[in-house]
Length: 122
Image (cartoon, rainbow, N blue to C red; front, side, top):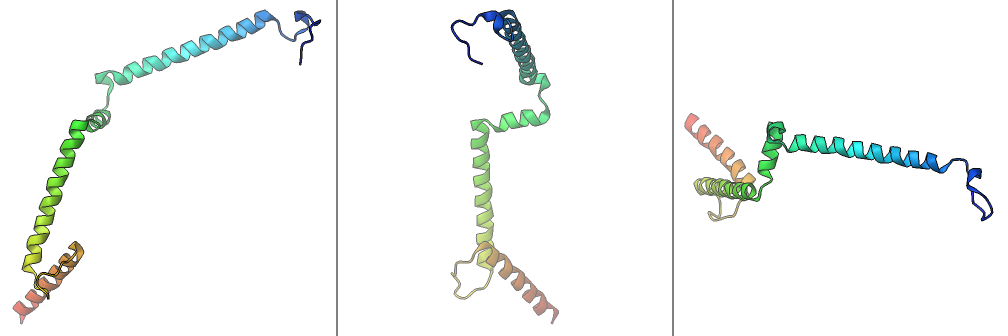
């Protein structure tokens, strides 16, 4: 509905006081929502309110923790690869220096162990 310059305010379907009341209600509800959200945030930020899982997540999110974890993982993988290398040296292959994948080393070890068991049984 458009207003013409000669149309007066009382012709409007609502009065100005109604609009002010509606705006006041909207502001009040927004402020009460923000206050409730603020209370919720304060509860989650308080140390006693954090669950064990939340504490663990926060600790793991630090750069120091990630760096230490990466170092531990690197050491673990290196030890794993050394163990595969030692196992590889014990397995007979032709040629002796043939490069094998980890799964090939495991399969060859299984076959070699079963062969040695067979030789012992005979």
